[in-house]
Image (cartoon, rainbow, N blue to C red; front, side, top):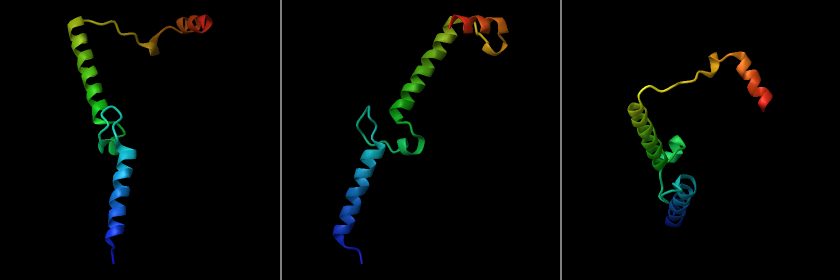
Length: 84
C-alpha cells in the first residue's frame, strides 16, 4: 500500500534531482536535454549561431588559404621545435 506522504516525498526528490542535474546555468531553467546530450539548448543555439556567422564570413571572404599541417615539410616542424 502506498502512503500519500511517500508519494509526496518521491515527487519532491524527483524535482530536486532534476534541479541538480538538468538546470541550464545560463537560463536557470530545467533543460532535460542536458541529461540526454550533455549540452543545454542555449549552448547548442550559441554553437549553431557561431557556425552560421563563420559560414557567412567564409562565403563573403572568397578563397581562403588553408594550411595542411599533415603535409608540411619536416624541416618546418624541426624549426618550430627549436623555437619552443
